Image (cartoon, rainbow, N blue to C red):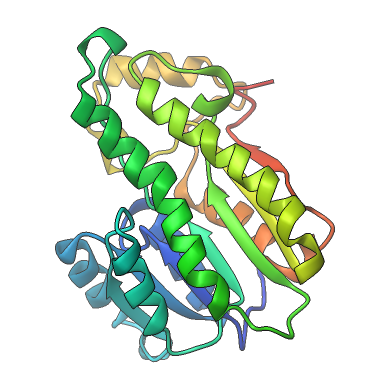
Length: 252
């Protein structure tokens, strides 16, 4: 699958949850487009694997920085922001987890873990990162990762759907609040994306999911990265407060 080309030379990027899955593809694409990228992730194992992979390209390695961050803790986010080796141009709030159960079986721990990571985490990261943005830039970008389940719900995902709906509310509010300061703030709502998690699902379940998608295929991590880089680019300067569905037409 071909990818869209962007030029982010001289730009500083933070990608949370950037050591694996969609986040890693986003970070990799920013590096390939010339940016300096700080990859924040909670998993030491994932960070090590990401660093090893990126080190295969010496040019990318020189512009990649890795930081262990717990987005549920403001102090952890603030410490990571303080260590950034560059002024910030783009923040991608991608970190997230799932704890899927039907509502009647969902525990308080299941609820709190997802809300604290997927919603409070955005608050913690963004408050910590805001002072690191280039003061004189008129093209500051925040891209938040929402989900199509925030728009139509999904069985077994009360916590996840609620958190991602909150992400959309945050996105629209920040678009209003930050617009005069040179920011655009947008969200991406991925549909069913092919990852290691979905590849482990039964073939029958995957076939049932694909049957509901007008595009007749699962999405790829590159589909989300393309959308993210567009919203982070100067070409999207008049796109603000929107939610971009990247779902093959699942929600129409």
